[in-house]
Every structure is written in structure tokens, then in C-alpha cells.
Length: 79
Image (cartoon, rainbow, N blue to C red; front, side, top):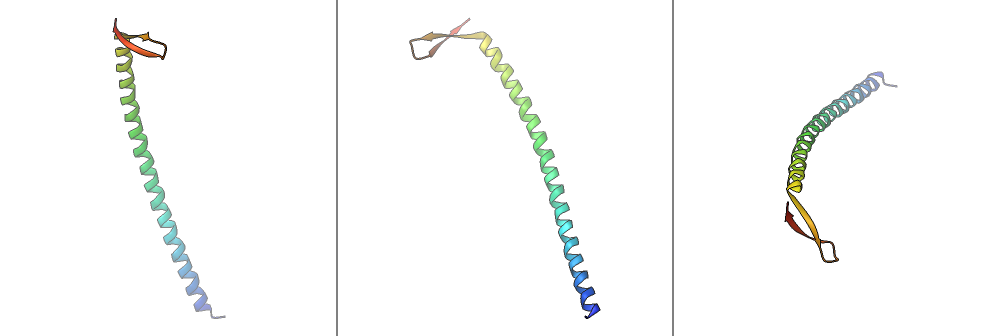
């Protein structure tokens, strides 16, 4: 058994594994940043949806609907 060749193979394998770990760490950091960005965007979307819902509720308070016919159609009626 040639010890220098074995040591060289082990060194190359260690370098390969170190590089793989480095790549995994980079990908994990990227995924974490993406998740944080997504979280922030979703918070903003939630705020906007809450505003829209509030505005729709106000609009619903100002306007009623009376049924017309038998097929669940509505006619808007101002209160």
C-alpha cells in the first residue's frame, strides 16, 4: 500500500467534502434570506388586504342588496 497516494486521496476527498459543505451553507443562507423576504412581503400583503377588507366593509354598510327574481340576482339599493 502506497501511503502518500492514500493520503493524497484522503486530502482530495476532504477538500471535495469541504467544498460541498461550503455550497450547502451558501444555499442555506440564500434560502433563509428568501424566507425572510417572503415573510416581509406577506406581512405587507396582509396589511393591504386588511385595508381592502375594511374599505369593502364600509362600502357594504353604505349599500344594500335586494333580491330580484328567483335566481339569486341582486339589485343595489342605497341606504
